Length: 98
Image (cartoon, rainbow, N blue to C red; front, side, top):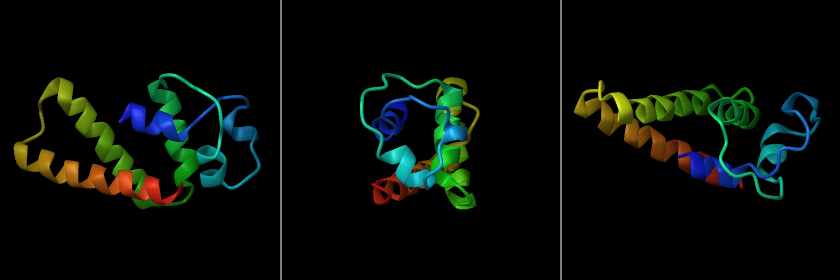
């Protein structure tokens, strides 16, 4: 998931709060290389791209819970299945923003 989101967000020249253009076009159209993003940077990226889209934010939180579950193993198998479906939906929605 980190690599997928990193591929959408290129370059980190100015703080997110100082940018004036539309969130999705700003975040997705950046050029350059960024390497690995830290968790806080990923959350800020999704916040910028999602704007007021509460469903995209919910799908991101599901992806984050699934990532956490990979290390902790607390999620029941049926919930993992539902979470994977949500993550696929999240990825498809991001792809449509390109």
